[in-house]
Image 1 (tube, rainbow, N blue to C red):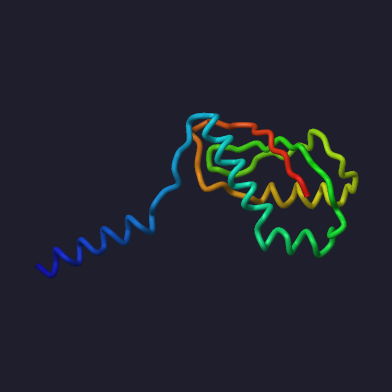
Image 2 (cartoon, rainbow, N blue to C red):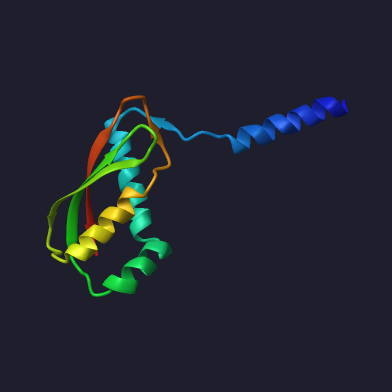
Length: 120
């Protein structure tokens, strides 16, 4: 009986610790998830602290294309249009977004390009 309980506990714990990210196949779902997660990122304490440290005076809107690949990583960041002209800030945004990893995955060899609007 003890052995059965130990095996059950191990199975439950290993399932929890190895829980995989959901796999998204539909582009509309991916757009919704990326938009929601990016909204959270740009309202997070971490982002606001980093932004306000060097770029507190930056106000405006940026429209960007974010490329997402199979593993949920951001593969590309492209500024489509912006009323923000500070190149250092645009580079900061590019680096910040390119290091982000989403909480979902895509199917093998699948990638999406998602247009996102950021307002500061």
